[in-house]
Image (cartoon, rainbow, N blue to C red; front, side, top):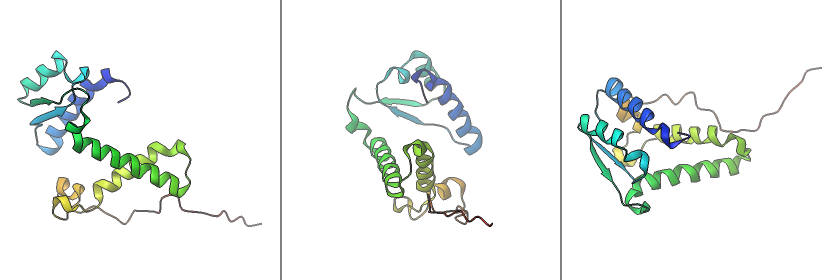
Length: 143
C-alpha cells in the first residue's frame, strides 16, 4: 500500500480472497486508530459482514505488540541478510519478499512443528527449489 486512501479497496479485495480461496471469514479486525481504519465507509463494511472492529489507543504501539514484533523481525532479518551478503540496498524489496517467504515455510514451534504454509494449505511446502541467496559466482569465458 503506497497511499493510505488505497486501504479500503485493498481490504475488500483481501476479504473476497479469504472468502473464496479459503472458505473463511474475517471475524475480528484489530488496528490502530488512524483515519483509514475508522472511516464510516469501512465501519459500515465491517458491520455488514459481522466483523468486530477493535482499535487500540492512538500512539500506543505496545497494544499492537504482536504485529509490531513481527514487523521488526522482518525488517531486522532483511537488513542482516543484506549486510551479510553485501547486497546493494536497491534489492531491499526482493530481499524482504524472500525473508517473508522463508518465514512462511519454515517450521514453527508456535504451531506444533508445522509451517504456516502447511497449516494453511494442508501439505508441506516443496523445499527443493531453494537456492543460496546472493552466492558468489564466477564468469567463465571460453576463448
